[in-house]
Image (cartoon, rainbow, N blue to C red; front, side, top):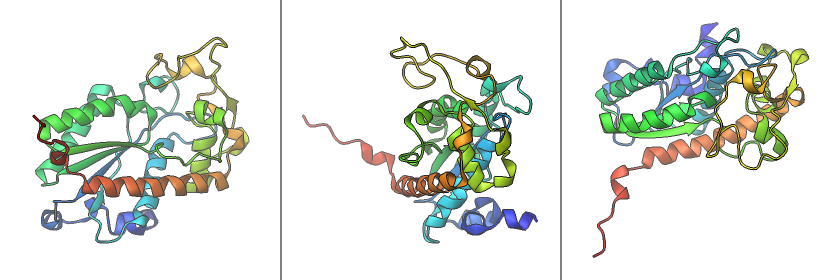
Length: 274
């Protein structure tokens, strides 16, 4: 059974952990890119698994690596399934690390990547609660190790255009139509659509600027914005939508990873014109 999980190009050809120490040592590190997936285990409403964020990250990478040739020097590490999910504390099934613990774990892994001779590391994140911390951590790793460090969220790209409504794009941030559709594609038996709710955040009518994330932000925990533990309209989720979202997103991620593998930070500075 476990053999079925570790299948496909991502695991058979591009999974760094399946190589021997000697094979890792012999890899050409000059243009190599190491991808560290970071997810979460946290409640996602009454209809979705607590493994949702990590599953989405794994599923997207499995599809993304199908776009690569054997010659492309891009490698995947095993996913870190625990993240900073303190905004969901007190809700059953949430297993969280503190901010300081997650920072320490990611930093230690990065140091090991450096010690193995690699030059590039991407922190590939599939949980919204990790965003801010990983942005900060990536710079600290750059300072401490000299690695070229990249940050990429699984939600980047334009995979939602024409698939879900503008309201869902803006407010369906957790366990809604988007994530439910994606999991219906990756692991449909793990979703209970009979229990899928509708639960949207209601910002004040006179609100002009404040939002749940971004540059004009108010701090919140899940209990502040939802009765069900999710945000969005999960009843509109379908596997067909998930297939479309996942395919578009994985194509975009493949392009980004390829660009990262060519990037040289030393090329950014030019001699000033006097």
